Amino acid sequence: MTHSGTKNRFGQSRLDDGKSIVCSNTRLDLPQSKQSQAVKALQLLTSVNLGLNSERARGMMIERLRAQGIEYEPVLAAMQQVPRHIFVDQGLASRAYENNALPIGYGQTISQPFIVARMIALACYPSKPQRVLEIGAGCGYQAAVLAQMIETVHTIERIYPLYQMAQRYLEALGLKDRVRLKFGDGQLGWEQAAPFDAIIIAAAGKTIPQNLLHQLAIGGRLIAPIGTTEQRLAYIQRTAPNHWQKHELEAVRFVPLKSGIQI
Image (cartoon, rainbow, N blue to C red; front, side, top):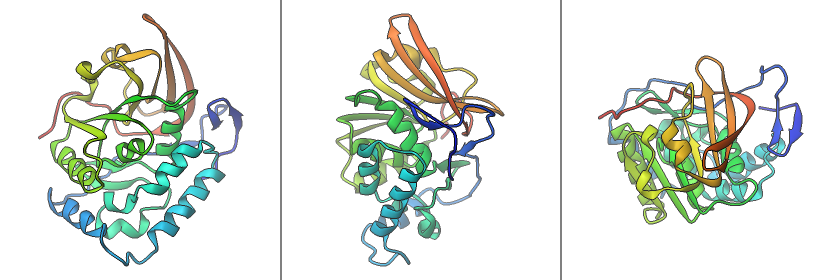
């Protein structure tokens, strides 16, 4: 997807007519075994033939991201290191490096590479955070990318089978000690581990939960989609104990931010 529009301190965005939409976490239903996807994906770690050269495919993905306006080299280097194909169903492995959201089951998707790069780059501006909280771990891909760059990554997933899936993938990549994964209600945040230098929310709500705003460190950034049928990516910075500045960026499309847990 090529983005045309203005370039500001947040990167290249289209802020005028709202017609440029980044499809990230669109809802897709794909019934599947709770165990089979994780097992198949882990087998891909040692597979020598995916029908494509995954390193080369990742390199092509990185070049597309640069062409789309992602200029933050640390996130590009991190995405080059993480094998996205292990996080999707084996039948979709050949599409893993396309700029598309792909189903991971339970009505959820793995976000398209552009939106992963975009949100992480925003979270790291103007300085790289030391402690990050991700709301909506999904299959664990974005947390794995963050872990290549950030010292401590906390991530929460409310759907238990996806929590288990992310746990397996992160362990398989040797990231168990760098990523602290929790099963729970993301809207409550992770108070015991707060404050966070950056918070990334991978689902859209009408507003940002107050718990998350207050778990942001002074000077910290929160990146999240806001809205229902029409959504925009928001960059929120906490500038004082009771003051937050919000900047609205491009139109996006995410699954709804929900409370509670799902077993």
